[in-house]
Amino acid sequence: MEDIGDMMRAKKELFFIDKKQIVIFVIFSIILVIKIKLGRLGDLSHIETYRRTIKRKKEELRQLRNSKATIVGKVPSHKKKILSAKATIGRTKSTATMNSKYKEIEREEKRLADFDKKIAGFDKKIAQVEGDIISKEKKLSSEIEREQKKREAAEKKRLSENERLMKEVSGTLDKHGEMHQETSRVLNELQNLPEEITVLFMASNPLDAPQLRLDVEARAIQEMIRKSNHRDSVSFETRWATRALDVIQAINEENPTIIHFSGHGSEDDEIVFQDNQGNAKLVSKEAIVQTMMSTSDEIKLVFFNTCFSFGQAQAMVQRVDAAIGMTTTIGDEAAKVFAAQFYSAIGFGFSLKKAFEQGKAALMLEGIPEEDTPELYVKDGLNPDELIIVKP
View 1 (cartoon, rainbow, N blue to C red):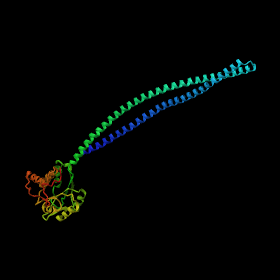
View 2: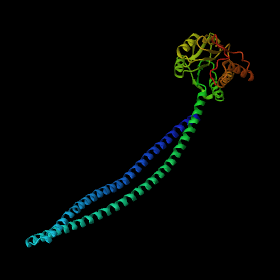
View 3: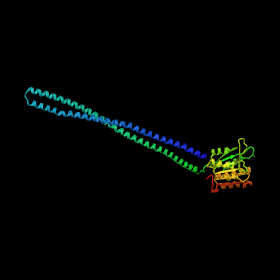
View 4: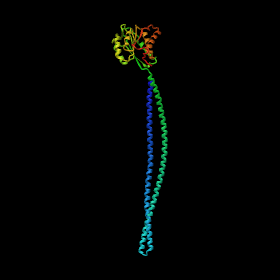
């Protein structure tokens, strides 16, 4: 049972360790994704800056070209005026007209010179803006290429890291699977264990009665239970110097399956307990039966390992499944040997009948001629061969 407890505690500890690893994996993955996102945002901000700059420059270029086109569009009309003035000069003989046309030609030529100057200025600005656009487009192309390589590298790293982490998680899940199988095995073992029963051993050895070696009997029973297959399913509880009222208290505390009385009995179907001064106090079989009836429904067997207790055992099976009593007096050694072997057989999962017969066999093997003293009684309708208290 201790091994099973250790195993369950180890399972619990490993569960929390593995759970911690999974939480760390999830947190790390989130952080990795955030870092990648932030890195992409930073790189994308550079790309967007270049794109906005290129868009602005192209708009500036369009405006410059429009302004240049407007100036260029004015040139023909002014050249036409010059040609018209020159034609007039060739036809007229009026000096005043000639002078007026020469001045007109001078004004128009000056305007054309201004136009040429403005057009040259626009050409210079256009060439500069076009150069800026080409430069920014090259930088944009390089940034996009760099971002693509960076993204591919980050994706490769992410896949590699995810593969590593998934291997760790897979290992953790494998451990969970192994531990789950082990837990299932342990639970199956626990389910296959017999239900635990309690044997309540109540001893009474009054000062004014012949002294019995009840402690030797208790120790022998404990040793034989400890050697049985289902020793972990049998709890052996003792009460010493038992007084009459101690019986109810002990049953209420332990809720036993088997009650074992060890001590003295009388020929009048009475069991001997102790009073407050440690002397003998006789209790009738009716009182004992009433006590069993009023305390626990879990009692399956009452064992009277006392002299002249057959009448008490016969009365007891009206309330419980089985009882053992003595048809006459029984010696200390016989009481010890019979009881020890009886409980050993119970611990091996044998029936009451088989356990009883093994107790009698132990007396015969030890050469103690009291094998006919114990008697097994069962409630009407029950078969002692089928009554098994510790069920394997």
